[in-house]
Amino acid sequence: MFLNTVLVVLTDLAARLLGNTLFRQHFHLLLSVLVMFGPALSLWVSQHSVFAKRSHFLYRVFLRSGWGWTCIFAGSFVFLLSFSIRRSLSLSIRHLSRLGVAGGLWLGFCKLLDILENATGNCYEPLLTGPDMANGQPLLVLREGESKFECLKAGMVWRGYEVSEDVFLLCLCCLLLAEETAVFGPYLSLGGISDAPLRILFLFCVLLLGLWIFLLLCLLAYFPQFPTQLLGGALGCLSWRGLYQGWYRLGPRWCCPGRPGQGLLNTKTSSSEAGDTHLNQDHCN
Image (cartoon, rainbow, N blue to C red; front, top):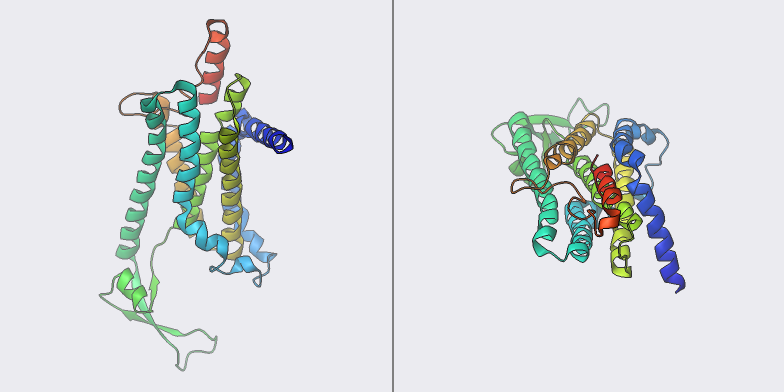
């Protein structure tokens, strides 16, 4: 009973925050500020910290599989919420298709970025000895005709036009989680059934959102790479805006899955029709 009470209190507080109109409208601005000024934290953090090593547990387990973790928790929450409200498999699949679209967009951009980096980059072979190593840095000798994969596989250095895929992924996942979980606040305010499994999934999504923000700060502070990280963050925000603030606003149809909550927060009784419809429209604005 005590644990259930704690679960209800925590999820209610998180749902009110994520469902708040001001939070939804300005969360992308918060991420933009973090990406722009986060590298300044490198002046205060210690490079001897455990988070200054790419081999850290959080980087290996979560960052390398960031999209998978996001799909597992956000997809489970979206499916359970939509199916528990309407009991319609087709409606649940339509809401889940937003994750598929975002995943396809992310993979497509990553492929384009790899092509761009291969087209604009060059391979360099580091020389560990030489007369010009006064600053302690090895000489880099250009090696022509090498692709990025072959270059890195041979232990050489690749220099090209880069966009941080890690920052791109984290920003996109943060904005996606904020959008998909924001519907839980209006759902609770309508008196929707909120059993323990649904609340636990929602809480996992909130914790995952907090983890992505923490890892984003770690990357910016311990591994600052300007402007590649700024470009990655901008690409993530633009992807979110194009999907959730653009395409999904067209409404549910065969070529558009619609916004989170559309078809779920509609009226359940005639007496509450006007209030529920207003709530549903307010969430989509």
